[in-house]
Image (cartoon, rainbow over all chains, first blue to last red; front, side, top):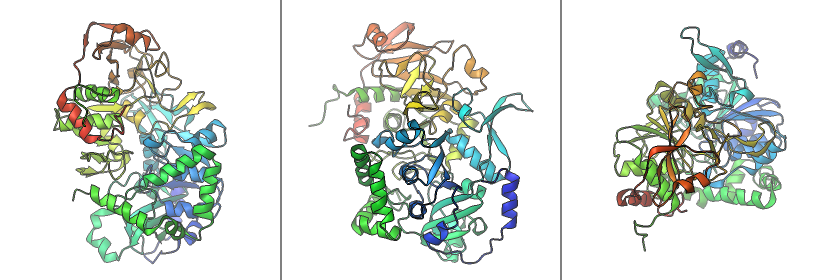
Length: 316
Length: 258
């Protein structure tokens, strides 16, 4: 990761991101990620996770990654057990409330197998936002007085104007941000429906941005809905078409998460420990040529059922 | 077939008591699970103009009966929302002072209302690594006042938490303000045995008892010495309206079954 926000700016200045087609395969896009990179993952918990890209990262056997995400879920468990991530920065990690504590997190942190930095949700958000704004830090009143700041990069300081105690959160400028959008045109203008979580800040902060999307849209369609464009083309370096690209996680208004998939995954871990995660990776990632192969295992019927479930929830 | 409203589970009792604390017309930042169910039920009974806010950047969702959100950002959580913004933005509204209540659960809470959801044991080498703060620290740091709902067990109500994830009144006597925090912190804790508040020094105190519970029962289930308010009273049993609202939202007892 760039040492300072000015170094991050220099990297951006050097890069020319012309308005040309950036469409490539997930395999080509993930080849842009280097071992040891800081990779920020869009979405949060089991929502709008760039899962097709994460699977490809694991398939390519990247190592030494620092992974950051607002709320971490199954994707971070997979990255840890695959040996891709050896450092995680997040506010929370588990599959979801219904599935209890993360056994993988427990084993990796309690056993000292991973470097784990816990920040409050807003604190992580401020770190991405500082990176996106091109400033070295942002001040807040959050986390003060708690035991959280001590293990992190945050520093207390006195406000030069009011004398208040503030917590300063230093910028994160990730090497790479992986974002899953609803649609994107070939140039990288990306549309996200629903909450954008922390995606926009983490992308604007990052040196390289890879956007996967449910579908590739014509530029005219993006223009027609310009107020919903989350990222302009010059932020984006690679565009990947990935229908159901968040599955088994959800994608706002498109499909609900596959809760039964989580339950079988967690049950297997309960029975067999982290070996069950390796087995999951062998079957769903390493023995498949690409994400479409994994979706083939899941089956069209299951995907259609998850879409129907999201439609039932729609109030429009 | 349906359970009469003269009978209720422990969780229903807690959710009903908690929802009774929510005044109509306010804005509440709720965590998933019991805080969200209690808030959504209040909105369906005595507080129709309550605005619920969720961590995923969601303002004013309409929770579908039988489809309770599992995460604060999922497809269920954003149903019918008036506004979907970013996660960071939601907390900046809290920092600005827009959210009247923050509403949290607690794995471990101490006599000053500090909450631990991070680690049991030492931080560097914990005995149990819990999921972590999520937005709980920010809710406790920034919402105008904080309500807590949790089961009354000695292992939860401890003298001192292993780790302060979400700041309460820290070590009491104004230490919260001295640390630089700008909001009031926890004002009430709802349990299956009691309603607790905080005295002027920020120490937790027994304010009221759930039906049929004695002061001695509460003392026996609290891991520290708990002062008793001079005018301690007994809470009414949950009313029919709020129980029906809770059961409509959670017909399978997913959150309120036990």
